[in-house]
Image 1 (spheres, rainbow, N blue to C red):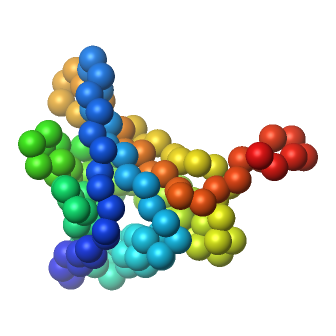
Image 2 (image 1 turned 30 degrees about the vertical axis):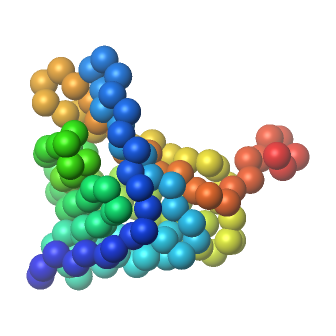
Image 3 (image 1 turned 180 degrees about the vertical axis):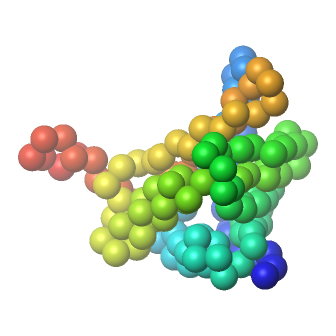
Length: 141
């Protein structure tokens, strides 16, 4: 098995807070299809790792057979991050993306995936959807 990479024409936005770094990406429907296929290959063990090559950085994802998601490293200068996702987190991210692909509109604006990073820091990956509708009770916003 090998790594498979996809070029995704988006920018990553980095924000630093005390004790936490965040990297967020905003994707459209076509980009969700690209990511969904790549992450499905990873979840089904058809590839060893997945690489998302962005306009200003990259996100590398592999599966973690342990019980905790991990941020292996994050470079502020290059916006490059290496993540290990558990099967549950990978499934959660895929569910979010594939529902967007199925319905052509997301049920929420974004999801956050939190990771322990170093001893005293956290890292958050935020995946935002360009097209979404929020449900509030029986009403759509």
